[in-house]
Image (cartoon, rainbow, N blue to C red; front, side):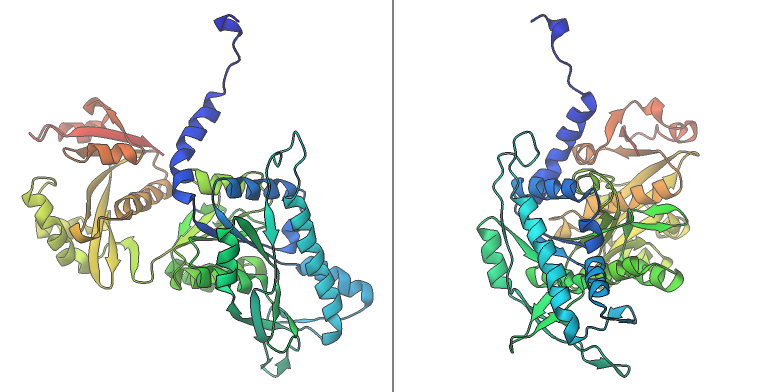
Length: 440
């Protein structure tokens, strides 16, 4: 075969695959709880989602799938003429409705198990062997009487059988949880799938909780919010009139983050490839809610100046950072963002606008006792989000000793002449810094 006749490889595919490698390594062995409603199950894209679940499983990710069944339950109840009203968005479940509910939930579970068992040649599932298990992993209790309303057979999660679930995950099984819970007296209760997913993620100490909904994350004035922290979620819920699903998701995400699940993702079940895009690309496809209960990344305020001074002093003495006076920090405080933990500034970074489409990242620093983690990268991601929100497309950084770290974060070395004119005039200050650029 001549060179000209050799098949050509799509360079975009090669680039994507190479850049997904760090995420593949990061996610391997981690536990993800993925929740989706009955609307997702009957959507045309669900079979593709099943293939993506199988792909995650093949990459060594431990999966717990939690499914709802609202539309299927409503259909079954309508067919038998049983009314099951909603009160404050929670279904009141009469005892006579339980057979129809059990049928809907059971049918979905069987459908998921059947699709995970596919192994047809010429299909994405070919050659895969996936053991999906379900059982009485969820113990429930009655929701009770609230505001004078008896919710009857509606329940809430009491406990999760963590040891049983972990044992199945250890044996390479996918665990399926439905919106059902069992009591010690042998009764079955109708649960919110979001409640089951949240409880399972918290009890398992899951690395991620992923909520699949009709919309591609959280939008604010037609702009996708790619990242939020719980305090922002709380404000958003107060200030916006959202549909029921997004309200459930945001409440669930906020609670999860505050109870130890570091990352919750809200993405679309309808968009082909959204799950893979969210997990294996830098920009993702939906909204990420992340927050350590004792630690947060936020914009700096004047009250942070003392903490910044203490953080930066050792690095300035070593010549790693340019010396900044307290007065200068006070004047430029609006450019800074900080990581705060229990009142202590652990890290900082600054973003200085340079032109209408570019900015400079400066003063990236993390306390010496807290460098064993991703805080520097998290700070940089926070600045990148700020830059995007202001319509900026390029970031520059000037450094003398941390060049390799910035390369690892996606920056490329460029000639100093690439700097905007005003910044170039200030460049020749004797430090001979290397210049790096990143396109957003």
